[in-house]
Image 1 (tube, helix red, strand yellow):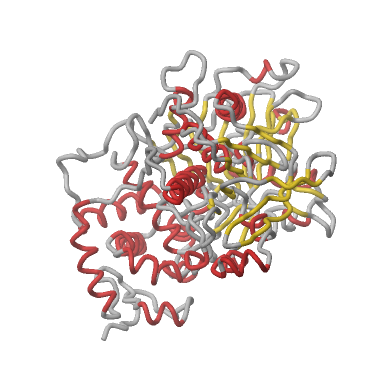
Image 2 (tube, helix red, strand yellow):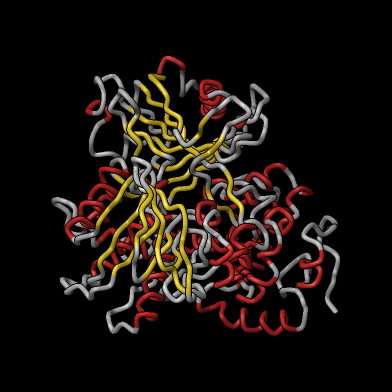
Length: 583
């Protein structure tokens, strides 16, 4: 939605944080005529920004970006950010990733999934039934990932258990249970664990299946599978998309420039240190500039778009007295998920999409970027770099495959060497040497990792993760203070999981709440939601009655009840059909 020019309404808004959430909120507010000042302590774009490799001109990043087809909020913003030569702004910089590869290091066959441009089955005319969905997932799991048929059937039934669960069960039962426990993964075969438990989880966020909420994993897997069947995607969207260049060039820099044309005051290097509270409102924001000088900034409204760990540090006694529920934020957790770029002398199009190194104990994923980028890598350097194998390490605590040490305990050079060897073990496992040491030009580790290899190792940009029970501790965008609103990927949203989409959606929620508090008649931000298959709504209605009666979901082979799930997050279950708790 383009609002055009609106005369300023005379209200000042302080936006705290200049990541995706902050930039999104600033744009929506500025388009509606508010006077917006953004305070960002590091760099605009946050985790999504590009990070120049010192002295080389090569683009680095916190981690590669991808844009699923079911994104609707961030991509709406992208369409409204002008880009030279593009009709639909920065959205036109998205290109389709056509496939996914689950690479194996033990000689087993890799799993390759090709994404169709259209629907696998006609979405408008075809209604899926429970038996059909379970059969499709069973077939895909047994043929593509070589999961034993009996376990594939069980896993498919567990997937459909979540799909047919009402919202009350999803939040009141499955959010309390880890994905591992939901699937009984520890009792299953390695192929089952690699496919159902860990396969997609590590691609979604820095979540380990033993620690991730079933609701969080189940929701995003459901959206992904429907997307692959042609359901729930935005117009023109495909299952997986990436940018045709660095995030800085193709999204963040044009976005920042556009905010400048809207009159947004962007203050980079300014750190928020305190929120002054009186009479149920934030009266001023304490910020320290680059020189260390402390300022008090007064605004009519404050939108905090800070990461959860930064916001938690601002929870003063006066703030908590005004909104005691915000204390729950301190219980929310973060994990490490950081990028490591390998710059190569040769292009390495392993597959036209993302690669999951299935047997990697460090949960490494990657994408070969040269095949997608308009600008060749030779333009960035001295002509010798032709590829960036952009990787992400999602498990920093597990022992390495070769050095037997967790990434948290390694020096940057040791991290790069171990990750490189793990990738080689996967790509070269079938007798063909795909990746060689001679290809490696250089590497670059996300600078958010500091003091690596020492006891003082730290991560300046951890990622919020949805541990079991975290939904109850997450706040809504509107707080009990009349002029404080919250944005960020840790705020409750429809998409739930830590993503750029979640950050953008939370920003839209915050702006709408601000407009409500202002009594404004200006148009509200649109809010895209995930696809809800209409043919399953009657199953959810029936499940709501069962949940209210304390009964398990009808399709759950383990017959887990809300009571047993709440009492024990790790129920003892036997192989086959689990114990029946139904009364």
